[in-house]
Image (tube, rainbow, N blue to C red; front, side, top):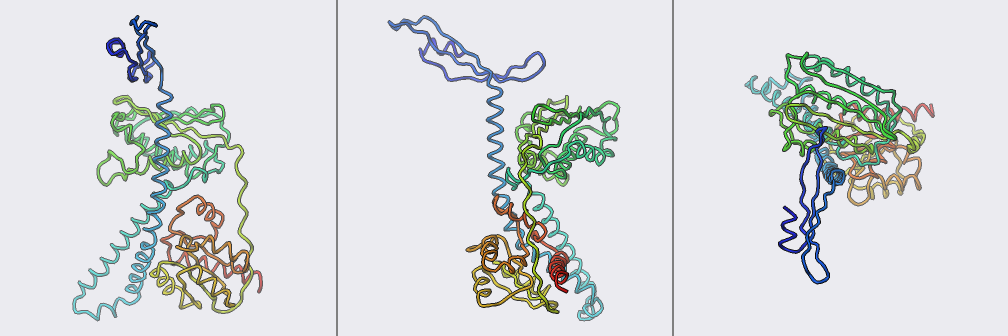
Length: 449
C-alpha cells in the first residue's frame, strides 16, 4: 500500500498504477500516490493519498509511441524497398526475356543438347525463379504504404461508398460465418484516398470473419456502424468472434506480427491499415475481450481545407526522327544494360551513370527525345537534375521519364506524385517501359506532324 510506504519512510511514494473495471465494463488505469503529512516540528500527522485517472494520458502516450515506431519503420521500409527494387528490376526482366527467347526457339534450343528433359528442367527453373521474383515484388509493393509520410494522403473520399464496396467484396466470406448488421449514417467526405480506405475496410472485415468459426452464421454477428462525431467520421467494425488475448493485443499493429498459421498471413495487413489511416490524420484503434469479440474503430477527419491539386506536367515539345534518341541515367549499371537490351534495337540509345555526366552532355549540344532518369542517385538526384534542366534546358526537362525504386523522403514522394503520368516504379515491365516511351514520343508527333 502506498500509504504504508509514506508513513514508514516519511517520503512520497512513487506512483503505482492499477487497472479498474467500471460498471459498464470499461477498463480504466488509475495512478495512486501517497505523501506524508508532517507539521513544522517534524511530527508525523498522517498521510494523504491521491488517485488520478490516467487512462487518456496513457492512451495518448501509447499512440504517440506507436506513431513514432511507424514513422521510423516507414523510413526504413522506403530505403529497403528502394534497394530491393533495383536488383529485382533486372532479375525479373532478364528472366522473362530468357523465357521469351525459349518460347521463340524451342526446337533449336532443344536440339543443341542431348537431353531434352534437362532443357525442360532449365525452362521450369526459369519460370519458378520468375514467379519468385514477382512474389518478392508484390511483398515490396505491399510494404510501400508504410513508407508514406503523414502529409501525403490528403485526398477526399466517400467513406460510405468505400465501405459499401468493401462489404460487397467481403460478402461471400462473411456470409459463411456470421450475419452482418449495419447502422450507416449520412456522411460527409473524409480526408483519405478512397481506394486505400476501401482496402482498409476489406482487411478489417476479413479479420472479423476469420475470428469467427465457419458453419454457424446464425450464432454470430459482424456489426458495422458509422457516425459523425464533430469534425470526425467514426466507423466501427465489431465481431462476436474469439477475441484477442491481451499479450497479442498490444502488438496487433506491428509489422510481420501474426497469429495465423505459416502461409496464411504475412502480418502486414493491420500495420498497413494503421499506416494508411494515420497518414490521413486519423486513428485506428482496437478493443477486444477473449471469448466476447473484437471492435476496430476508424476515426477520420472531415475533408476540409485540403491542399490545392498539384499542377499538371508541362506540355511536351516535339522532336522528329524515325528512330527516337533516348538517354538513360541510372547509377545501377545492370539496369542500364537491361534498358539497352530492351530498347536499343528500336532507338538510338545512350547510357550514363550520373546526372553530372548528363549535364555535361547536354551542355555540349546533345539533345534527346526521351530522357529516362532514376530519381534517387548519389551526387545529384533525378529531382535536382530536373530542376536544373527546367531552368537551363526546359525542352529537355519536358522529355523526362522518372524511374524509382521507392520514395525515401516526403519531397521525393511529392515529386513522384506530381509526375505520376511520367513515372515508372521498379521493378517495371518491359511492356510498361516501351508504352510510356511510345506515349511520350507520340505526344511529340501529335503536336508537330
